[in-house]
Amino acid sequence: MGIGLYPAIVMEGDLSPDAFGSDVDAVCQQIHDACKGFGTDEDRLLKAMGGMTPEMRCKVPYRYKKLFGDSKTLKEVMKSECGNRDFGKCLQFLAVPPHVAECDMIHMACKGAGTNEKLLSTIIVGRSNAEMELLKKTYFDLHTEDLGRVLDRELGGHFEQLIVNCLQASEEVFDPEYHTEDKAKEDAKALYEMGQGKWGTNEKGLFKVLCAMPPEHMATVNRIYAEEYGYTLPKVMQKEFGGDTKWAAVLLLNMKLKPIEAVAGLIHDASAGFGTNELLFTATLIRYQSLLKAVMLAFVEEYGKPLDEVIKAETGGDYEKILLQILTTADEL
Image 1: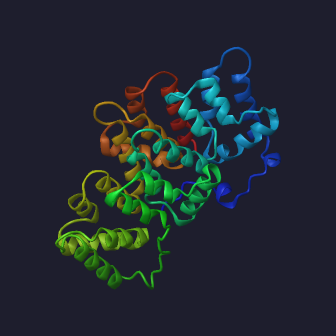
Image 2: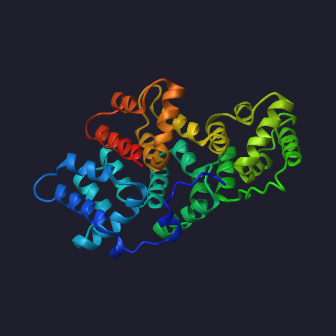
Image 3: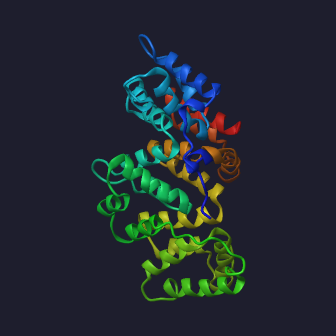
């Protein structure tokens, strides 16, 4: 199945604020102490917020509200104390459970003039069926609007077709008796006939097949396709599409074929070239925190530089400190 990012506590819906334990209460107290009185103790605050694991981020917002009885949520406190720029946005994403943070990111990606297609792609593409269903439900609960309709309004063309297919949560469960070598050969041929071997690409059919493939089966199809037709599937997507569609289609395949390297590539894309895409940079480090220990190793191997050095070179101030704290926490998971 597609890679999972949400802690078990989210998938099980087991959030009981009165039974979270002393560790959660201690983090809540640290946050409260950093924010009370005149002025904010940013160093103390970022250590508490950046020191939370994904599971802790599910618990602290609920417990904080119960302990301190404030009319504001933890997210609202972060916005009030630290504003809405890069550091403040990072804290706001950390101040809600991971599935809620992703809904906030989607809402932000669709807000204002123009859509942040790259950020949308990273959230929608390559997800497990269960997480995609929870994401859609959570978005509706928060914004009383169907996520599919929102994206239909924001997107268009082949990119929209790909995203809509991903939203269907249609990935098959891997079955070695069904997903055989012969089945992989049939699928490789079908993909060729919808793309390289056809005058004009059958985008709808191509996306449907790719979204439905479980990772184990896709690895076999990718090998056979390269042997038979001379290209890997990611290379085919690069040849068949352009712009955001190409970027998202390659990401879809890489998140199934080599997810750790794919995440390292996302971080590199967000920080490469002229200027850093801070929103994508922040979102990627927070969303994939549970994988970051492996991602950091892959990043050094692929790009020749430690991720913490990239953060120090591309960011500064409290924003730099909170991102480094997220890395430190991930390294301890």
